[in-house]
Amino acid sequence: MARYIGEQSRREFLKLAGLAAASGLVASCAGTAATGKGNKDKPNIIFIIVDDMGWADLGCYGSKEIKTPNIDRMAAEGIRFTQAYSGCTVCAPARSVLMTGMHMGHTSVRANTSGMPLLTEDVTAAEVLKQAGYACGGFGKWGLGDVRTMGVPEKQGFDEFFGYYHQIHAHDYWTDYLWHNSRKVHMRGEKGSGERYTHYLIFEKTLEFIRKNRDRPFFCYAPWTPPHGKYQIPEDEPAWRIYKDKDWPRDAKVAAAMDTMLDRHVGEVLDLLKELGIDEQTIVFFCSDNGAAERFDGVLDSSGPLRGRKRDMYEGGIRVPMIVRWPGQIKRGGVSEHIWYFADVMPTFAGLAGACEYMPKEVDGLSVVPTLLWQRGRQKRHEYLYWEWHLYDWKKRRNVPNGLMQAVRMGKWKVVRHRTDEAFELYDLENDIGEQNDLAGRYPEIVAKAESYIRKNRVEPRPQIEPEMLEGKMFR
Ligand SMILES: [Ca+2]
Image (cartoon, rainbow, N blue to C red; front, side, top):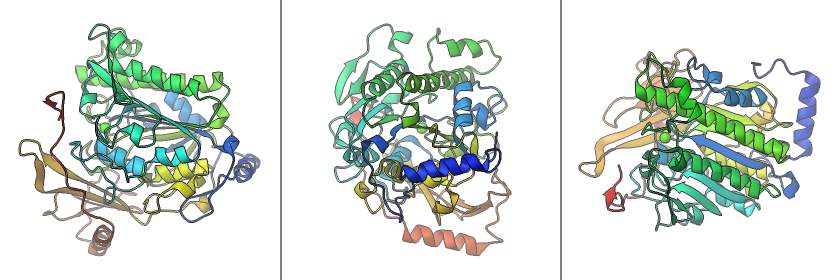
């Protein structure tokens, strides 16, 4: 695969740059001028975010065992990022960062307990795009407000949302019901069958929304739930047949099959865009919401060379695969080392949609549109990126004392600590991607700088209310 500058000819580069300039897609939404284009220039945005897929679970990210030909092709036709990050190391807060454009020191939902939904005053990426004339639909797992709260997606900018509202509900692929705009949709058919397998229904609804909105700008948010455990898959799922007889632990086989199933569905989304004639009007993102839930070391090696996994502040918890494809606009086969994270998604959407004026001023993110369009000189870079997550004691129903985990990335440096009463560790990611060699003792001034960013750029989260009960059962 081509590196960022390489196999593309200069002539083609100039053509792409010209296209981008002509269509006004140069806004960074963080200082440079916003675009104000008419509807015909607003690309459709499809954001596929799968659940707990590891950084190394795709062929194009080095997986040797998991078959992902469609996503690999998507990367070959678009741009693949090697240093893209989630907003957090677990589901709900990661999505809060994504939806609000604010990092974990500022965003509203900072825990997986559902003890705090998005509030009315929170401005989501969907609300920004809605004001710019987009139809907004979501299909999969929401996690930012349960039914009967102000955090539900249809009160946060979405015209429709089909799937799970509570992330713990989303653990079960053969649940009794899903939600459609807070209306309960009962699942028919036999439990354990493909007929009732929730991902199939969520995928169908995703395609239906794209078909329905083909003639107008749309934002299709697809927070699909595989390969998150429970590791459940229909016996007759074609992807399952590839792995079912492998000599691996069952969970690893199901996780691999879920990835290959997702891959087929990504391919079908791309095929649909061609069928509808909107391939070149549509930018498609593919990423994971946080690191691998299980590493499956020696079998799938889902974190690759990275340390840790989901729930860690090490790279294995927060670094994610990120691929973006937009025929005619994004150079084919690019690989970028640009460092960015979910807080940058809202400004990127706003830049694409000419919607910068609708974005709250407080966002922490920076648009990556210049990087997508190969205008590297225009790309603004973060002074620092910030993550935190507070460990929760489910028995005592409160945060673990001193259990706040924090991480800061500054250029090649990564500062991390696992509790507030422990010292920070420091790693040089350029030379030590596996975070093995703690340099905090040698460079105390780098650690001090990270601490000063944290002090200046973090506020306490809103107080959590009691974790929610749903159908009389507490989800955890
Ligand atoms: Ca997740």
